[in-house]
Amino acid sequence: MSNIRRSTRNSNDTAANDGLQAMRERSRAVAEREASRLARPDQPVASNQLGHASKAKSAVMSTPFGQMMGGRSPAGRKSDPGLQEEWCGPFSVARQMIAAREEARRLREEQLAETDPNSSKESHPLDEMTEVALEKKRRLENPSMNWVSRRQRTNNSPAGGDAPNASYYAFRSGFNNVPSLFQLCVNYLVENFESVDSLGMVDHSIRRSLCERLVAVGKMNGAAFDVLAEMGVETLELVDCAQVTQDQFCEALRALLPSGLKALILNHCGRCFGSQAVQVISEIKEDELELFAISLGGAYLLKDEDMAKLIGAAWRSLSSIDITACPLIGTQFCQALGVYFSTSVGGVGGTLLELSLQNIPLTKEALLSVGASSDALRNLKSLKLREMECVDDEVVSIILSSINQGSLEGIDLGGNPQLTDEILPCIRRCNTNGNLRALLLSGLKNLTAIGLEIFFTPIEDLPSPPMLRKLDLSQCSYNEVNDTILILAAKAASFKQSLTDAVDEDNPNPESLFFGVSSVMGLVHINAGGSSITDKSLEILAATCSSSLQELDISFASNVTDKGLGYLTSKVGHQFKKIHIWGLAQITEDFLDGHDRVEEGGLEIVGVWMKKSGVRSLRR
Image 1 (cartoon, rainbow, N blue to C red):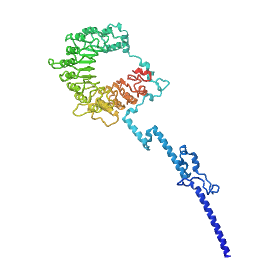
Image 2: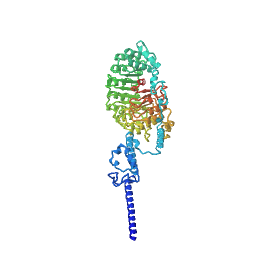
Image 3: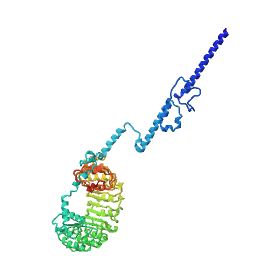
Image 4: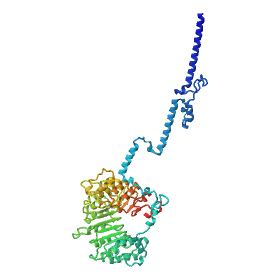
């Protein structure tokens, strides 16, 4: 009995154990099959289907999220076999989504970096505020950035026309074509000049305008010369003497010199002015000869001994000599200057105030003899040595040292590329009285920025920087003539002497310089063509030369913009008459049709005739 009960109990235990074991095995199979939903194995399995369990027998039925994402993955992920073999669980799917976003962002940043290199910089929440502050500072330091063209201030076209970009000068072309009353009178006289017997007591400037117009229309002949060179004129100025014969000119000299002719200004005079004309001048009595100025251009018949003879005949009254492109002049001319204008002649020599030599084939020894061997240049006020091979640093130094300290008012050394920075201290030392007003150094390629900066900077034991009215630094080295040079020159020319030290040089705003500007001084004519100046120079000119600037040449200065020119035009006075902008392709209609002088006129813009708009020819 007991054995029966024991066997029954054992059989029940065995059945229970078998049921538990079967449940465990089934639960294990389900867990192994569904584990991919909760974790990713270290190694991918060959098949998602378990051999010992099926979904049909599983107690839990589900669709893995990763299988759904697999069909929606981008094309780049489908091509990657490593990503396709990963198991689909919540963590693995999340990692795939994060990786896809990172890849898309990387591609987007690469494309953006190709179009805008600055976009790859890291951003900061305060970047926008910092940029606003920097922009405000830039506009304070560069007020030209605030200038706005009239074309942008007014939405309507000036002509009330069809397009807002219509040229304003096209609208005003009729007004620009109307000549002045003076020009109408000159044109009428020239058209009927064959009927004019005498001009009467008209001014020299009117005779010059008539001569220019006669040459332009091809009517400058012998008959016209007789009318222009009538008895009683004090200045005979002819812009072109090519049609005047030597006999006719000599006959006019015999009549004009005794009657009070004081200035003889001839250009292209190779045909009429030679040995015969010099002989006529030398035959005039000393008390009747009042000739004080002689200017000859292109006198290819004038010999060296003839020029020396001319100086010997007129030295008592002669004070201005201007010779250009006379190829036969040489040593005897220089010797005559040293003899007749030095104090060695009877104790009292002639007074030479102006000496201008251009394109004359003199030797270095001949030119040095004028400055080293005599005091003929002691009273010189204007010196011009232009385009001469013999002019170097030594010649300039000796000639400037022979001039009385402080008497020079104008120096022109342009076109002599052999000159260097060595001439700048010599020019500075000869300006002891501060009378230098014109300095022309165009085409001097060997000048440096350091030398020019020192020249315009106040230095102890040297005279003050010159207060110039005319400055020409065109066609020097591009990078050597920059904003610093022009700013120093403008400040030296414009500041009152008593306020020079009081100016706050650390103030970045150019408009703060107005209080120290002299009302009677400042640059009048500036030529900075072919330089590297920017709008900063124009801002300084607007602050220091607003009441003096009349003409500005910035041709081929590629760093100047519409805003700089527009700002300058809006600040300077109505004495500003002409601006040269040859080669400035960056200047647009925003300035040409939008500056503040468009309505009232009076500002001539030279160098824009090649623009697309045909009316640009109206501005030469």
